[in-house]
Image (cartoon, rainbow, N blue to C red; front, side):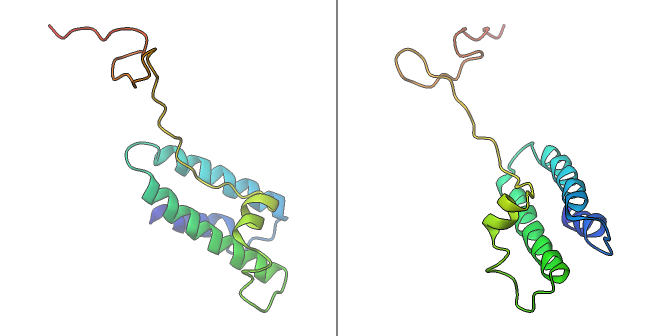
Length: 118
């Protein structure tokens, strides 16, 4: 997948910058890919990018901190995305308007009736 290759090439290989610099570049890249995948079915794409980014960041931090193990305990998912501030791509939930009767509307504008097709 192109997003994963780009994330590795830009953010991790031979990076000598501080962690905030690397993180900001990575988050900028992830925001762009999130916008790119925002159309259509995005759950599978987001999951693939999130998994790849997590493993790449964990590998990067493990090498930078000279951790001999896999680093899964020290750099778990919550720590990478929470404490270290790496962006996690999430699909926005589909919001449906509710009519006064409690049913979801399929009409345009939710409060307005859809224009009839002529």
